[in-house]
Image (cartoon, rainbow, N blue to C red; front, side):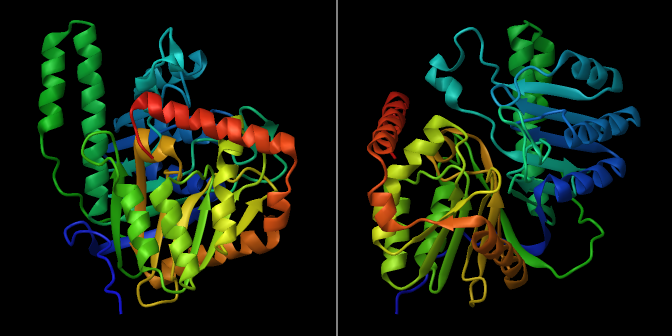
Length: 412
């Protein structure tokens, strides 16, 4: 029998974690606000989108309350996803003492410069160095979309609340980015003493995080990061190893699904060796490139017996997977990384991986329920006979995506 591949090096997983699954902003934001209101020393927060509409404003209010109490509060938002903060909110954050930075502002040429395609896409929050929130959920009201207005049903997405040794990894990573950004800013303004001090802060080793006083069983988990320096392919490799080890079932829910050749082949091979593979994907039109560029990869998957369900009630924004939830090696991941080239080749991403049957079963049940009650199964015959106009648009989008990858010098 084939020997299972190691999921990670032994030093990356540890058994001292408690991880709770949170679905949507409806579950995440109250948990975030409770943690921020209890913060004693510091809050580190990174997000792609920070939108102040609806429940997003409540998160901003909690950040300001913490800063006003003297809690060191660092907020980083992405220069594309969020851009410049609204002036009224920026003034309030400043007055409260919230320190915030915009990651890679676009500048006059915008996205015409390929290096600007490298975005901060991860969603992380660490409170007092001992509690982590990680997932795919932006600071964005479940029923609001900046481009489409009010939604009839909540956005479908997940995050986790976690304690344990992976919190220190997340905190260190966020500290490094924060101080690098401050150093670059100070150097550009020719404030060299401040820049040197920021670099010294970045090089300090942060003390190990204390375990939060949580309840529940301990779990085996790890934080998996992707960046453009040392962790270029760790998230994709984690997926491929887990898929290669699958024996019974693979369920993946992903908002923008355009896997590269190796990942596609891993899914096809799993289906051909008898593993039931189900994909829950975006069924509503959101963006031209993400919607149409994904369709050309469906054919080979459907031909291999992969089941594809399109989520219909609202926008699917989840980036999660669960493999063999009820087997002897359960594997689940919740994070910010899509299975597309923007996430896997260019963006800063963060996923939590959990090897625990209770956690995996909880996630599996929620995904199966969504497929059965809110998903439309794609029929291979109808896919093959889709209208010519749609097939042309699919190929154009796919070609543009490949051209963009060629411009960046990446192979996928």
